[in-house]
Amino acid sequence: MELVLFLIFGFLALVGSLGVILSRNVVHSALFLLLNFLMLGLLYLVLGAQFLAVSQFIVYAGAIVVLFLFVIMLIGSESVGDFVSKGRRVAAYLGMFLALFFFAGLAYAVGVRVFLPPQGAPGFGAIESVGKLLFTEFLVPFELVSILLLVAMVGAIALAHQVWPAPSREPKE
Amino acid sequence: MVPTSYYLILSALVFTIGVIGVLVRRNALVIFMSVEMMMNAVNLTLVALARQLGSLDGQVFVFIVMAVAAAEVAIGLAIVMEIVRHRDTTNVDELDLLKW
Image (tube, rainbow over all chains, first blue to last red; front, side):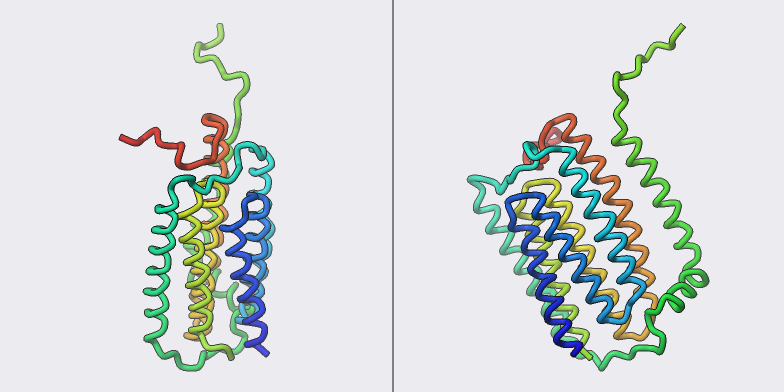
């Protein structure tokens, strides 16, 4: 049963990720990215990580993809066309070759290890246990994350905020 | 239970597709999406290994990675907007102002 779910969700996740890099239209890329994120969230559920699955749906599928779509719509379609580099086929093939080489290394690293059957603890991945861990052992990183998010928010506003007309440098009398 | 190595192979595949996207596509937004995909692949690895080891630490790491990814997307998309405002393109090959 778990294997069937894994195969379905994993296949769809692969379809999504291939769609991101293959589709000509950036909006389609964003929607394939959404498919990929959703399928990975379902895989988290299969793995018994309910809390992370819900965060995945909210943060990635809900916030990040919507942000991408927002920016695509704001920029407009004329400047987000497709730029598969013309006359640079060699670079593309070389990139693919490098990536395959990289994958071979990863697969080898995974293949040489023999894993014992997974040992799931009782109540593993439930919100209770993750929350307990977040607020005891990992309290400092958790709080630092909030500072990081605040700084990112201020930075994004400072970068994207358009002052129009531009403020004059001279102090007004 | 599905063996952990299946999950690792799947995440290696997704990560590799992300690498190809970064290397081959020239649209800043698509490159950005590929980077997000690679982060997600690593998250899947962390969750699978957390189950393998029976420890929840990996899931906490994934939570923190998600927060970092959200911050990264906010800043990165603001930078893309700013580039489009100044140069009117998202093609990374045209952004060679720093090239010597």
